Length: 258
Ligand SMILES: NC(=O)c1ccc[n+]([C@@H]2O[C@H](COP(=O)([O-])OP(=O)(O)OC[C@H]3O[C@@H](n4cnc5c(N)ncnc54)[C@H](OP(=O)(O)O)[C@@H]3O)[C@@H](O)[C@H]2O)c1
Image: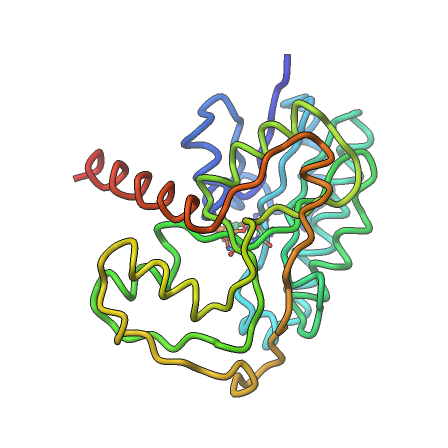
């Protein structure tokens, strides 16, 4: 039987994975700081998982620029600790990277790229996801204006379409790097427009912005090639279908939590 241990249970992806699959043993930073090898080894030995998912990360891009040492400690050294302890215990590892690793131009992207080389028996999932806590969705739903890049190329996926792929991959146990996104080739601006259309939000809330105006380097083209997904026999989803899945999940979740 597959016993899954998850680092980063309190984060966006970690908490969603736990919501979908309550049998996962979730570990928070308070339970185990992944920069501490002995603590990581202790937890992994104690739980004895067959699969380890790593969602622990320092993910704030601007923060990583200001605090590169902390970013490297968690996003690289922490991953090395988990990978080392996973190897000692013969566990398969599922590590999350980012589309930023495709075109690394800032500290966050560099740390994510470096982390990918540390996974041996396991898979690194490169993705760009959005969920109900996504700042863009939250801002639009509360009637705030948002500035969105028009000169970026992305193929994002909602967390609700991403998670079923993750579970299928855990069953298939491929090794290497795999990209997970939608069949889209859009900018952040286009994504905002699609969310407005699906939720009937005023599109004038979206103000076009040039990514060059950011005060740190922003990757422009992080479109992810999805051929490896199809080669594994997994079908792709269009961004339009994905946004409908997102909408359905968000509205169901809202109803259940009122
Ligand atoms: N969000 C995105 O759009 C996106 C896109 C592509 C890829 N990803 C990747 O997906 C993964 C999950 O991202 P996310 O957005 O869910 O992250 P997140 O919401 O920022 O959550 C990160 C989690 O890591 C934990 N953490 C931080 N430092 C730790 C440490 N030293 N030891 C143990 N735990 C620690 C945090 O715990 P505390 O809350 O206690 O600090 C938090 O629960 C990451 O690998 C990220 O690079 C994210």
